[in-house]
Length: 388
Ligand SMILES: Nc1ncnc2c1ncn2[C@@H]1O[C@H](COP(=O)(O)OP(=O)(O)O)[C@@H](O)[C@H]1O
Ligand SMILES: [Mg+2]
Figure 1: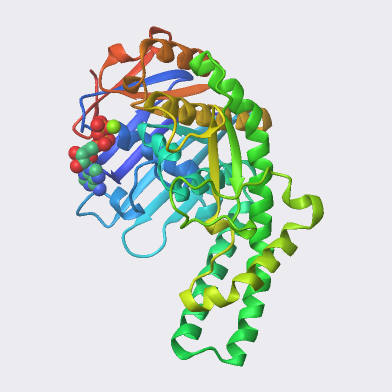
Figure 2 (figure 1 turned 90 degrees about the horizontal axis):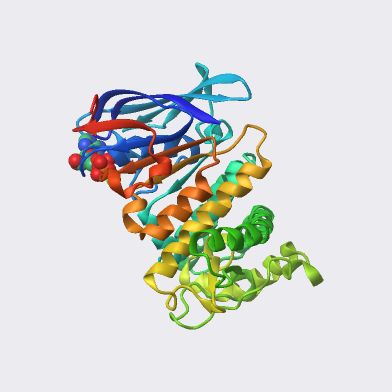
């Protein structure tokens, strides 16, 4: 698929912008702080409902304004689709496709993109929450119906935590415990589906990840992914350096179902959960361990290796989406990535992404971008698209 046109209204530093894009590579250039990232962030948001920059939706509305609009014309399977979202400072965001209102959370059904950015380094080095978000966004891009399961799980988790807190504050009463049992059922139902879907995804990412890493680094450091599951006793609060309990993706289902393991874990944790007033097991406490050279990348891998791992993971997800999609390749968005890479990795990355239908690249310095990717160029200055 590809984006043919983007319109922004009161988004970040853009009052109004109209930008046309071409098939193949598109280069967005301009000095720092002019709005390059803002432009591609808008497209990333349409496809994932999130930002690769740490921020809230509100930060994306132009300061002083009540609402911002992202509107993109997309093309795939010979069809033209107009997807748009209005970000509101107060109240819910609103989404439309071809001028008909849709649920905002259904937007990722229409537009598939993969964003590469320096922030991806945090996938390797940062908190588990970033890795969970990575998996969940990819799950939703592949199976949009999972957006509902994820939001159901979040809702149940919040309600269950509220109940645990009030039980802690008031001293546990019998009727609170029976209400807790009801929430347990729902937590286990939605949570187990998320755990199983993530496990499948992790397994499917394995081979494309190895291939992407070889393509970018030209060496085999044995990159691998391992699920670390709280229902099997892995503890998010565990000391850094202690290797968490890990399982291979399918091991959980060998003897008993995820549901049963989850349920058993909750029984074992009940006393501690009531003491702490939070839910201690479930996909919201899980992690994904990145392995390189048989060691966890976090804490062991060099800066360059960590970067290559993050890039490879993004490439692997793009590859997976490409293999399965009925609407063509995901749009690749490379925000300021080439400046971070040495010449060899620049060239290898360029070769790895060259065949994707559309690639949007931002760069402050044109010379950082491998010549093979320099084609259609869009100049950005002070929140406006200029002629160069
Ligand atoms: N909500 C907002 N309203 C107005 N300006 C914003 C908003 N969010 C960010 N900006 C401005 O956008 C600029 C940064 O744009 P960015 O796209 O990150 O630059 P770059 O071209 O370096 O990628 C900064 O000047 C910042 O102040
Ligand atoms: Mg930028």
